[in-house]
Image: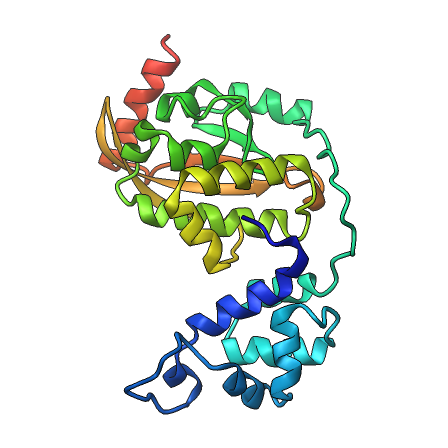
Length: 275
């Protein structure tokens, strides 16, 4: 579930527990009782007091300076994405009222392009809802259909789980991208209901959500076991649609030209769009 009250502290705790002593130049002790670093060790490395770091993790201080956050980022060896996310957690507003999410609308020009492009393509929103999809995308998976949600499909639908040959990697990327997409906008009904449902229904989601990983909804190569054409490796490109703060992404699947995968994709194309 989401602890809106202490998102900064939860993120710091997760990073501390996954940072190994040897990765920051500390000796490894055989009888060490805590995963990762101790709070006092983090404080020492960041050049802050142990009491102050404890207050940060416990949520008793939610407005640390950028200098302190950058020092902690260095301790945990966060990349640029993780550091930006950490800084954003200290800037979130103290607003406890639930909100209805803004309606997500696919621009007409993008909808038209989907109907003409000769590749599997779909548009997903900030919460990974499928907002538009062409027949080729649906030929890849029936879950790539308007009204479906990528998180619910991949975590809860048995057919979608079987589609991905590396389901664990797929789920890890999805959750990390989802966390980056939503950021600190966690007080709307759509987010709360979605994370609540997944947390109750999927142990894998609970595990990944607790890891606090953050990464862009990036391009990547993945392999599926398609019921019609068998194993096929595809490349996924994701492009921002409209303003970046709207959270809409255009996803396009393609294959290496001249490959067996390209031939299999062509078979699906002829099936989805017969002449």
